Image 1 (spheres, rainbow, N blue to C red):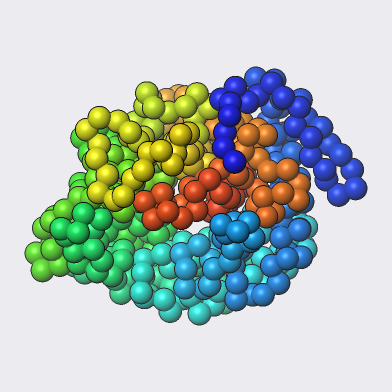
Image 2 (cartoon, rainbow, N blue to C red):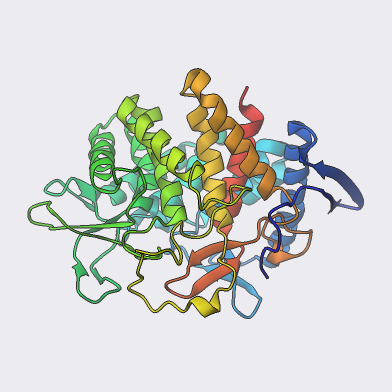
Length: 419
């Protein structure tokens, strides 16, 4: 299933909610901020109510649609486990309905052993999106303990010789020429929020100091002069010297992977919030400018999975067959992350933030259209369609992804609260 139109707004979107039907006219934009938010959360409640009747095994967390069309789950060790409970917390935050709180608690606490995960950097995604939202909304002291332990586990992957958190254990690059002994990926910016939180609630500055060191390195080594981004930076673990800058999930080593750019916009915005160091805000803003002003960004501001697919000067190291992709896939997950990030970033820029808020609204309107928003009971009960996991790996292409849903709901909540 692929997108056939960019002009998606002159439609009637009809969604079933419970036993009733609510219709919203879409013409240029959804009529009214409140209507858009209400419509989208109603659809989210519908979908996740259905999801909870299907997903009943607390060791299996909804992730995507499998190639055979069934719901694909993942375990507590995967990087995406925290997004489904996080989405449930967002539904509780919006609705104040205790049923969502109870579901969120159940699915959050199913991740408890994740606090001891030291085998990759994504303990931040897993534990902060679940326990972090849970603590924010309930102040459950047990959640705070879990989060501090999670930060301790994440910190174990920091080496002061490099000054960054090691994202993955050693692995080979696509070209077969390099082994990444100390790979750090742009995604890792997102895991720093857990560290800032842990220092605030524990009084231990260690976690914050690690986060700031990592963010400074990322600003120096991941961000190109034009404020596009590399996906993977491989360091010499003994000297901290940069050995390679490559990609794992993007089109080519010198291309700009859309979701990686989104992680950077969001991550540097968050680090500015926690440090008030304007260098991070300026980096986030200029990365957002690269995204929003890119000539290869479609009119609806939902990007292709990489900004440089099929362009001269960009050569994949992986086995790419352009004939398999007559239409370049979009990545709604990247758009959702950017929308959420821009709503926050716009609040730090005074009058200069207006254009970023408007861009965030435009992205939300696009994702809220029938071209991306699922119909009730479809899409394996995920909210958004048309995301991409990793085309180089041949996985999760033009499917729903649980983290697209999570950041879409977060963007809606930020939209509701702003102004």
